[in-house]
Length: 65
Image 1 (tube, one colour):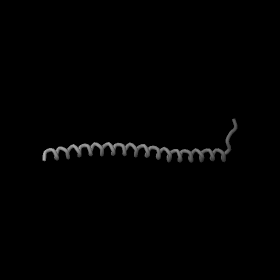
Image 2 (cartoon, helix red, strand yellow):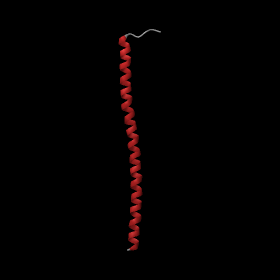
Image 3 (cartoon, helix red, strand yellow):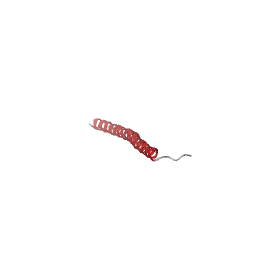
Image 4 (cartoon, rainbow, N blue to C red):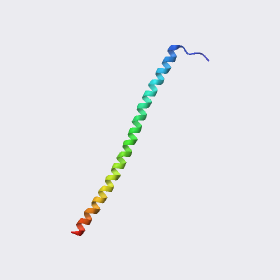
């Protein structure tokens, strides 16, 4: 097992820092993508419920007139 000199050790530390930086960016992108998908799904389902309620109430108004 050979010892690392200062240059290769600092190169390893720098490479690890770069990897951690890009991994953070990629995982943030993935997380925000899935979060936006979930929020869009919730919004669409809420809008669907709202439109069903609206159409039901419009039918009730139409029937009572």
